[in-house]
Image (cartoon, rainbow, N blue to C red; front, side):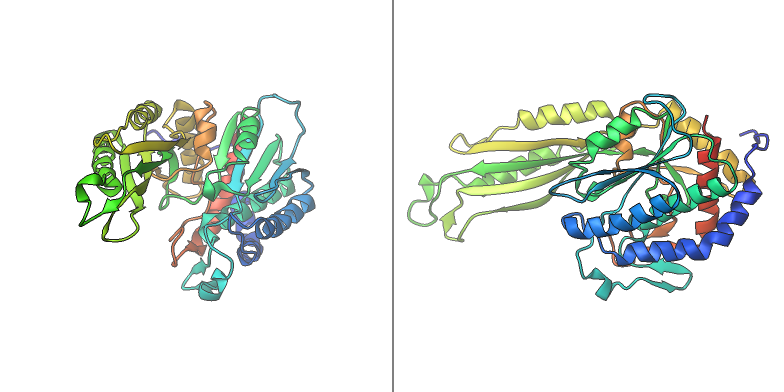
Length: 389
């Protein structure tokens, strides 16, 4: 690939600023991590969101709190030049503050610095990315580079499928020319493609009977479920990037009773939008083999895939060129996990993901952020915000 001409963005100044602000950035991450925020605890998420609101207000953001009843509130914070509704040139910075970790996790996974890493629940996914966004915006303000409108949207229930924030995300993305997602990097790479996700539940109703006395009168829901599991598992097509995984199943009451009920929950991942439609049709057509049993299916595609579009590639190439000025060899990657970036990409809006922290162990006990990458990745994020037209 030919080397691009140097950008007009003051990369050295951004990197210097990011390094200077690194101690404050780390402290901001630690503050957010210590405010535990499991998706299913509205009060806890709101407490964490209040910290973000305070940061946004201190930076002069124009704030709107989208109040929610069941889940945590959603923060929309606008910075820079105010544009008319629908005007081009606006950028959406997309993140979330909920985590998969229940309250009390800090007792077993304390937030601490150890061997060059900042550890703790939610450090990588994705409170570090949120803190990086605030720091990048602060740097642009100080350097006089905040020459467009930036919308920072922090959702409260991304980890459980974004049931209330999805319409907010899609509406705001439709007003923007680009979306930059603060999810963690894939290794050292930005993410240019993500699989879409679907969740289905299969319920079987059979006929109960005594397993010894009236065996022939029974119709086993578990046996019928086994047939269904074999069928849906056969829809996996690794070459097309389609995986169908039965992750949970159950049924029956006693070992000596022909089971009248059984169920399974199915995770589906798709790399192409069209495959989601095909899988939905397959589930809709699923029938019981034993006519004495009834089978019902609920669920569907939750997030469409984030496909590698021209707009996303354009953003990645721009980031790659800016990264080279920082001495970084920035790669791109695809992942099987989904994010809210799937939603914005599906609308046809250029979306670049994985722009948050570098680390390991998202959703795992060893979750951590590599501190040495924080300053350079924050400088790169700020440069991308300054470079958009």
